[in-house]
Image (cartoon, one colour):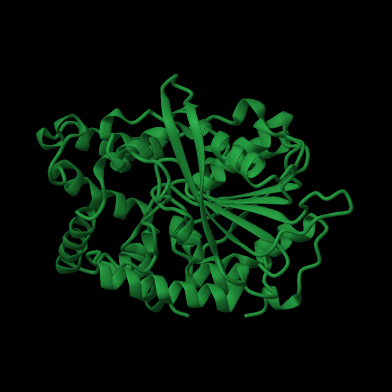
Length: 394
């Protein structure tokens, strides 16, 4: 596959993905939401899910009087989640085949039920075969159908952090689903950062974690800079009005093209944007997409990473770790050599920096698991699982 062909294929995902940020489905294509389109999209997703991994079951878990780490309390917090597969119980009656799959910033669990993930990871014979494993795909707080600022509280919503996300994920797994021990955790971008936090906060709670496109250091460098630029663009816009806007703030509409640009790999953008006309279309398309997104939800999701810092606790991790990054990911730059420096501190840690190729898309490669499913196969084998050969055949 040549680069130009891949880039054309990737524009569908690129239109809705930004540095670790994907809208609730990869196939929105920047189009305006309407009931008919949503129904058709839901029907197609359901058919794909049934074909490749059984029927996804949707549910809500409610937590009363939940106290966030900043001290604020919500009378009720909803965590929406989907599951694929059937729980298996061992001789002690404990579920032993549960795998937690965690989405990226601005997305939700439904983004992981698209054709790419279903066919590359969850279908029969694939590394996370839903006929063998019980897959749990939650919407993090602030995202999807879980409690979030746009539900009505707007800027009065509690200032949640990644630690709150992980706490609610853990309570979902243990209290609501009755799972004492996870077989594995797979997380992409923000989900990968959550996986690092799980390994430290609950060291005996899983057999292994696989963080994808994330690093075990605080948000810093360009990753910090672009977030601060977007946050400032929203908060400094008079239309934001302290979060009580009636239409999307212009600062947000102007910042979104930057977020789009920052996600993709440099070579891909070189092909996608050969001239000024293409760049203008890119900007206009991005602004159009931004109108369908809630600025408060984005503001909160970008700010929530402020408490992320697993670096001091790396030596306490007891579970197996298989970290995957991509050489052309501009937000977890391989040239910083972070993984080479820090992974030796993880007693059962291994990391891979997958080389760039004509098919890879920078950070956006996370949205194309067909390009890295073999790494998931390697991870599952490291846990002692037999993975069918078909899982790495293409």
